[in-house]
Image (cartoon, rainbow, N blue to C red; front, side, top):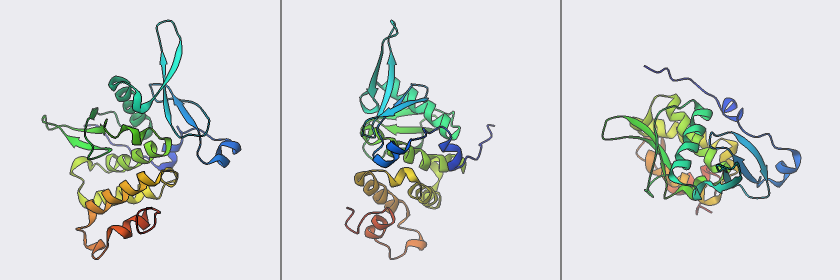
Amino acid sequence: MRTIKKSSIDELRKIMPVLNEEEQSAYCGGTYYYTKDGTFIHSTGTSNNIAIEQVDSAGFVTYTGLSDASYADQQEFLSNLAYKTFDYSGSVSLLKNSGYVAGFMTGSDGQSGLVFSRTNMYILNDYNQLFSTLEHEAYHYNNGSGIVSGARAEDGAYKQQVSGSFFAGASTEYKRLTAESWYEEVKGLGDYSGSTLSDFYEMCGLNRRGK
C-alpha cells in the first residue's frame, strides 16, 4: 500500500516561482509559463493566466492557455502539477461538469481519483486560483480522506485554503464560489449553528453580499 506523505505549505511553495520586487508590487503577477511536466519557466505581463508550452516536431515553441489546451495537455499538466505540489501520483481525469472545480471522486471501478472540471477550467486558468485549489485537494490527500471526507474534513480543507496567500490573490468570483461551496458542505455541523452564507462570504474576505 502506498504511503501518503505529509506536505506543508512551505513544501508546496518550493516549486513556485520566486517573484522579483517589480512583479510583487504589481500584485496581479503576470502570465505564468509552464512546461507540460509542470515545470515553471518564467512569468511576464500583468495577468495571472497559465500558459503551457507546446513544442512541435521542428522544435518550434508556442504557448497555449490552460483553458484552451487540449484534453490530453490539460490532463498531463494537471497530473504532473498535482504530483509536484503534493506527491499525488494517482489517476487524474477531466469531466464536463459545472458542479465543481476539482475533487476526489470514486469511479465505477471503486477507485478514487482526482477529477477536474473541464467546464470550469477557465477558473483554474489563473495562477492563484489553480494553486489555491491544489492546496485544498492536498489537505484531503494528506489526511487520507478523499471522497469520503465528510463535512469535518471539508471544513479543514477550506480553512487551510482560505488562509493561504494564493487564495488572497484570487478573484472575487473564485472567493464567492469557495464561500458558497464551503457553506453547503458544513452548514449541518454544530460548529456553524446559526451561521449564514453571509458569514462565509466574510470568512473568505468578501462583504456580506459576496462582493
